[in-house]
Length: 386
Image 1 (cartoon, rainbow, N blue to C red):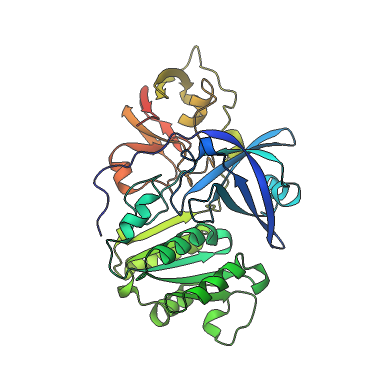
Image 2 (tube, rainbow, N blue to C red):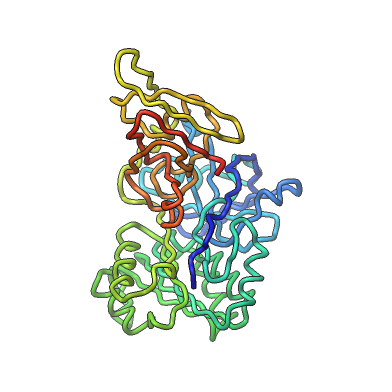
């Protein structure tokens, strides 16, 4: 396996209004939301398993954006996402309590790079899934997920198993209890449909199971036991890690110690566990300092150029500065997780606080997450179209 030699182009992040066709209860605190994609937007909403969409709605007078992974296989004229209620989460609570069939909601076209390097050759090209799978002999993929981290894994697993007769897929799935397992029925269906090619190992932190290995929280010791006794790391072609920061980082560190090729480890975070400042990333009021020091930030978006002066004392992000003069600058999570706000630095230098979305080759090519980046030179030039 090798890393891509060129940075894949990404579709422009654009919102369209889609209709909700179904809201299905998954667990007591999660729902699956189905959105109809009209014929004239089918090409815009083509996606590769593992990608996400951002939803935008005005709730209690606030414009909120939240990113949710697509949980279904491509090609059926709809987008399905799973939304788990977060404690104190305004958007997720609204979606679980209020969202109904017939509602209309703004949906960003699919984005993201939590996709298989082994089988998929280009972003936003679902046909590449089939073409890539045909070139691999009996690939073995393993996913380690927790809670709602199962969402993109469902799309990846279903697609891989259905389109490659020689592929095998193994899932370690951590939850608090059996009642909280999202997509329990669909996971069972995969076991029945592919009994020799799909295996799932449920680890429940608050329930006792017959095998103590599958009870309790996944800490460093339990992870080592799972990798020693359940999944043989040397036989895995590609890993998919999705869940909270602590678990994902724990697994990444352990795989690194076992000398697993970093290119074979794909990961995605739903949250870093840190305050993201999402609500401030809406072009908060900042004005150039007529007497102080300012940074000139110029950028290109959709072929049009714009510039804004940012006071050094404000230490605002590139995203916030750009939003003050262009409200259509793309962003979703504003926490360094999703990568929607990616841009290439053409001139100047910036400092990036967090990065959980960009690959090493993207960083080397000069891409940054504008929601996490601050200028460190008097002039910075960005290209959102690159």
